[in-house]
Amino acid sequence: MPPARVFPVSIQMKEAIISLPHTTYSVHTGASLLQQAGSLIRHRLPKARRAAIIGDETAMSFHLGTLERSLNDARFSLIAHSIPSGEAHKTLNTVSEIYTLLLSNKFERSDVVISLGGGVSGDTVGFAAATYLRGVPFVNVPTTLLSMVDASVGGKTGVNMPQGKNLVGAFYQPELVIVDVTVLNTLPQREFVSGLAECVKHAIIRSPELFTYIESHVDQILNKDEQVLTSLVADNVAIKAAVVMADEKESSVRAHLNFGHTFAHAIEKECGYGTYLHGEAVSLGIVAAGYLALKRGLVSQAELDRTEMLLSKLSLPVRSSVLPDKAQLIEAMYQDKKVQNSLIRLVLQKNIGDCLIVNDATTHELAAAWDYITAG
Image (cartoon, rainbow, N blue to C red):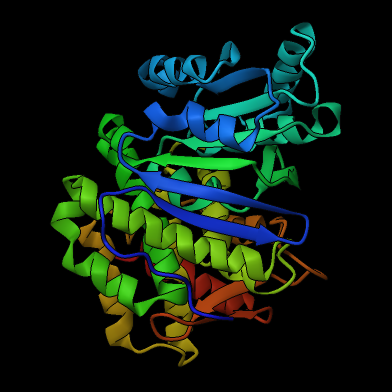
């Protein structure tokens, strides 16, 4: 596939265009974009009369007022509704609550549903928008780094089931994504750092240049320098956009974005959602997959060490002392939605900037990878 478009470093708004056979939409990235959200949405949806802002409680408490003022200026009639924060509430019950809200307010197909919050909000509200009246316009306004660089781009929506994560959902592309890096100043540092795991993931599977950029800007990133963050997020969005345009429904290369995630989903499920934040679990998954790649001769020890060093500098975990028994974790991997014909599909890196998919990992290899991230 062609290399991802890399935007020049600038504090100005950047636009990534995602063009698919059935739709084209933009991802706008920059500082203080919440104040421009109303005009951006109005330009995209000139006939929309009403907007429902639905988001997690934390994001709504910080940013609802700014977004409401912007939408009022753009002549939208508004309703707003908070949903509980956290992965535990990414359920069909929450979706049903959103349906009730929209039905009671007689929302129509021309009205717009806006998610304000992190990946849980975007996935849940997006799934409700995809299925209410068989689909209403949806705008994603992510407020966490994790959702900015990953969950908000690409059209995956859905909720968790007791049996596993994201087992019920739909591909449903938004009308628009508005990424305001300024809101990251209200994000707790642990959650901010969690999102950096997805940035490292994108670099490992697609861009050695991005990997080097992150290595050389660790301090500015951790201090939330707006110019560096704008560049970092825009480059990650460009990588994600290129992958989505090449493979919207995950029939081939989009599966590369699952690097580290098969291990991570098992960690989240078996440890209980919240013990590890998603990005923390992904960080451990990157290391586990990296070790498996090392043992297969796909990467050198120096490359694995370099990956672990960067994750550690970003304050992400590379080892865990609280994981359940490895047999339990391996069983959870077999319940992952990416399992095909009872074979676990894993993404393994080939050096930094390249990867491949395998489906022949043995139980012995998986056990060794789990042992590696629980050792020492």
